[in-house]
Image 1: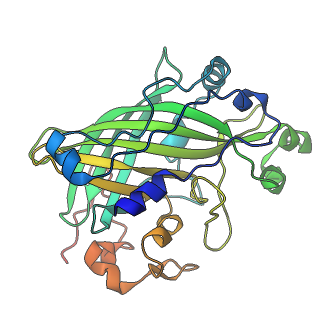
Image 2 (image 1 turned 120 degrees about the vertical axis):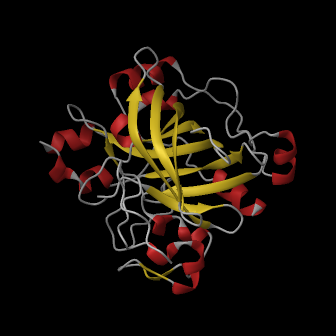
Amino acid sequence: MKKLIMCLLGLSLASCQQSAPLMQREAKVPAVKPEVVESKAQARQELPVLFAASDTLTQPMREFLAQHDLSALWANEQDSAYPDPSFEGFFGPDYYRFGMVFNKVRRDLTNPALYHVQGKSCYFKSKNVRPFSGKLTVRRLVDLHYPGFLKQRAEQFSSAADSLAGHTYTAYGQLQLQEESQENSGRIEGEVVLDFFIVPGQAPAYVYVFDHDGRDDKLPTRGARLLLRGNRLNLTTGQVKSFLVAPDVSAIAPDLFKDFMLDERMGQINPKYAKLGWNEYWKNDEWWAESPKPFRAL
């Protein structure tokens, strides 16, 4: 488990050759290695550190964030490719099915790097849905070198010149959430990774993969457009468990289970992982809705 988390938290792409001077002036801040020894975190009632304490945003980056509101993208905005607004993936050392959703994301009126978040987490093993609130702070912005992407998406733009003027980026956000106070409620600290592009005159949009398996390991999000990873502290027991979720679970599952998908094209999950909560994956239980359908009995 320790090795897995260290590998996942280490995945990122460096600022590269794309001709976007804004991100080339990124502040150089040493990466902080997370503390992932659960027994020590439990004893201290602390969560592993995922970001350096110092500010990593330059003034041009702050101006960029003031010009471009990323609220809809952080919220996993629904479209024809991703009609489900939730993130799903794995929780704890046994990799049980875990879900999150951001019902509301609002950019702060005075700080363009800060977003206020409300949503819910779902622990499918215990069939437990917990509301949360907190903040998402943009901590890094880098150029994303993904050749040919904007040209491939040219039909989305009003002119070919727009695609040539566009740029692709990756944003890294620090997620700090508190679940509603009750027994075994949790505090969540995580990293949210967003691959997106900007074309003049249009709203920010996702960079993601349309091929049959929806995955590209060259992208920081593996092609799932967003990726969330971090840790949860149980405020009752002091236990710390890690999580990894994305809009497309097939983009992250191979890191844990090479045989998780029997047929990636059809999204068929291997029945041997039913005990982890995946036996009802296709039941369409909208657990994040205000009046969700009840969970079906096992």
